[in-house]
Image (tube, rainbow, N blue to C red):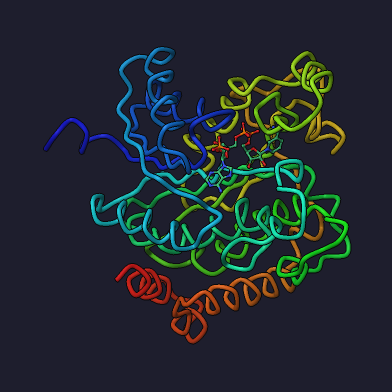
Length: 337
Ligand SMILES: NC(=O)c1ccc[n+]([C@@H]2O[C@H](COP(=O)([O-])OP(=O)(O)OC[C@H]3O[C@@H](n4cnc5c(N)ncnc54)[C@H](OP(=O)(O)O)[C@@H]3O)[C@@H](O)[C@H]2O)c1
C-alpha cells in the first residue's frame, strides 16, 4: 500500500484561498491527511498548492476541479473521487461567496441549474456532494464539517422558494444558505447519523468575522479595517481543523455548532466578533431556533430534492425510503453512473 493510501483522506472545497487554504494545509501538515483541494479554477488551485508547500512543507495533496455553481461539475468531481478512493474520512464544505461577488444584473443571479448562485454554491451543491460521496464517507465512518456563519440568525421568515427566483433589486440569500447548512446537518443526522450502523457525523462551524478573500469586492478601506480587526484566515482555520479532528466530533456525536471567537457560548454577539479568536479551542453554542426546527428541516429537504429531481437526478429512492442509508447509496450510485 502506498504512503498516500495509508493516510486518512480529506476533501476541502474552496481550498485555494482564505480559510480553506489553511484548513487543507493544516490537515495535511499537522494531522497526516492526504488532502484533495476541490477548487473551481485549476490555475488558482495549482498556484495555491505551490504556496501551501512553501508554507506547510511537502504536504500530501492533489487537485480536483469542482465548480459548485454547476451540478454537472459536482457530479464529475464526486465521480472522480469515488472511483479513486474507496473511503473518505472527512469532507469540509467550506467554499462560499457573499452577495458582493454576485455579478450585477438579473442574468448573474441564477446558475445554469436555475438556482440562486449564492444558495447553490454555499449550500445546495454541498448537499449534493455529500449525497454523492456518501458511500466512501460511510466506509470510513467519516465526518462532514460545514463552514457556516452567524448570519444564519438573521433569516426570518424563511422562504426556500426565493432560491429559484430572480429578484430586482437583488436580495442576498447568504443568510439563507448558511441557515440551510445547519438545518441540513441536523436533518442528515436525524435520518442517517443516529441509529444506522453505517453512520456519518455532521457538524457546523461559524468562524466569525475573518479577514479573508471573501471581502474582495468591498472598498479598500473596508478591507483594511477588516484586516486590522478580524481574525486571520489561518487563525480561523485552526478552529475549523479542531472541528474536523476533535474527539467530541467522533461518532456517535450529535451535530455540533462551534465558533471562531471566545464568548460565543455566552452571547451570539460574540459569534460575530470578540477580542479573542478561539483558535484551536472549541467554543460551542446553540444555533438559532429556526436552525433546530424539525418541520423547517423537512421543508428544506423536500425543496432540495425537488431541485435535484428537476436537474435530472433520480431521487425516488431517497423519497421512498428516506430513513435508510441504502437510499442515499442508491441515489449516489445512480447519479454517478
Ligand atoms: N470571512 C468571513 O468573515 C466568514 C464569516 C463566516 C463564514 N464564512 C464562510 O467561510 C467559508 C470560506 O470563506 P472565506 O472567508 O475563506 O472566503 P474566500 O477567501 O473568498 O474563499 C472562498 C473559497 O470558495 C471558493 N468558491 C467560490 N465560489 C465557488 C464555486 N462556484 N465553486 C467552487 N469554489 C468556489 C473560492 O474560489 P475562488 O478563489 O475561485 O473564488 C475560494 O476558494 C465560506 O463558506 C464563508 O461563507 C466566512
